[in-house]
Amino acid sequence: MLSDFNTLFYDAELNDLLSSINETDIDVYTACHGSYHAKFVAARIGKILLDLHFDNRTIEIGKITGLLHDIGCIDGKHGHSIKSSKMCEKYLRKINISTFEKDAITQAIADHSNGDNIKHAIGAALLIADKTDLSKERVLNHANINSYHKNLLEVESVDITIQETDMIINFIATDKFSPILLNNLWSKAFTVPVKAAKHLGLSARFMINDVPLEL
Image (cartoon, rainbow, N blue to C red):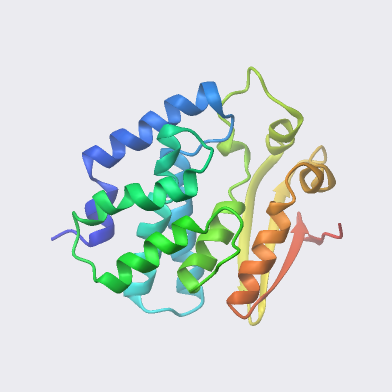
């Protein structure tokens, strides 16, 4: 029998939806909010919660949250956090979860834009995973690229390591990558992980190619 997460991971209807978001993204957005992003965020949430020694069920609920967190983008990016929170209930009916788990998922998704109402570790892990998906793999539309996404093309990966009470967020990037430009154009890349890490009892520290980053 498939786990609840794998039931949704292999669900044909959900995968069609995520693929359709990718197709929309090419024209409307430049950063992927579909299949690649959903699976990246799900995996990263799982790793964060595992490294913090949460139980297997919390890890699974976290991964489900990551998989579903952007499905509202099928109707456009504006207000997609709330849309995704409402739309995900359809998919949650396909698995066996408790009311508490459902509420945790929908609340975390509704709050994943700014992290102004973090209720639990799942929501904090979602915010960190979502805001650190910043590598060149995220960029879809190279034809009409702006300075923000051109900067992301210089990032090979953003790696996360937890060491005692520190969460180290390390940009592996070329010399052309500008963290200052990223901060100026989208400061959430730095402010939201700091806020979410604090909720988990951690201090977020940023690095670039293993060198401490000062903004």
